[in-house]
Image 1: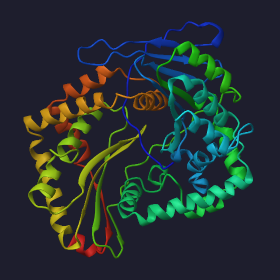
Image 2: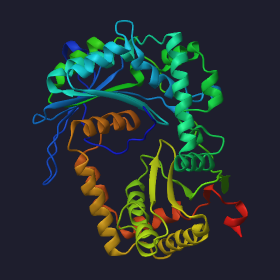
Image 3: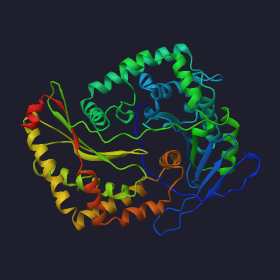
Image 4: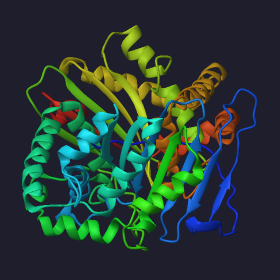
Length: 453
């Protein structure tokens, strides 16, 4: 149940204002895909009287269903003294409820061949299960139980605390993970976006059962919750079952968030006796709903997002200086990041850093070539569609977008956004992102002097 980030998504519904029947639906809409070559999809959204939203996507050909509960609160919404409490709570919800023990929950899911898991991000926490289609009601029932009436026993908090401390120790010993953690701290210093999602050892050790129960009671409310379901289903039946099983008191509030300032910590070095140095360069980037987001993803693919990228070709294929070298993007409601990662022998760090700078400078000077632009756009559009083949990925898309954006985007619209990116848009986002101060992090047998001399 480790932290993860899910991005991008689906179908933009057109809600009506009419109230619909016995499920106390306040808003509901659907829109099928119509474009050539794009899978036809139907998404429906309902808002219950309690404030909880239900979003479904019907896949009549599927033999399975995926059910997820998305709570719009995450690591950035925690007070500093409770850093890690969202992740702590994520671990605890499957430990049992007033009606079921942890073993009973596991047995029920195993009995039908399903699986269940959860993860915490900076801005939401997700709980999900995948099951055969005939067991849909079981999935809704279990998630409704753990989200509405978790036991949160003192002894479970104490036992799971040790599990989380071991998880933090594992992350500390995973040197590339440590480098990525440090670059987030450097990009967002003194801001919750820069904190480790799982918290720090000191805060995890200090969190009490009452802290966990208070955090749950305040934030895990219908107004912050989205239930997303994809697979062989009937929307009305799902809505009725969700209303029956999710019984938390109505209402709740969404967290109020403070945008990080523009401060970036330029250089961080963590000396460790390793065979390699883990090098991460971080740039502040655009927010989740920024109009430049598609152009940023095109830039990312050209720079280091795939096997055809400049960094992969130059540093790994041509020169053999690294096994792992790539770039990636992350986006939040009011900020984002683009990072470049490479792991290489200590004696080669300066050369790898020079080559990264060379490729970044070349992109800043001339932008991508026409061929690079075409490859990147084709990759993003194609991989986006390939990612929609199973109920689990569609459920994740629905839940993430409705939770973070308040809507679910149309597949065709997302693909069209990628296709429409031109060199001018990429040049503009290069200036916005790569033209700004960056954070450099190195973990390994290296000194600050060696990086700056």
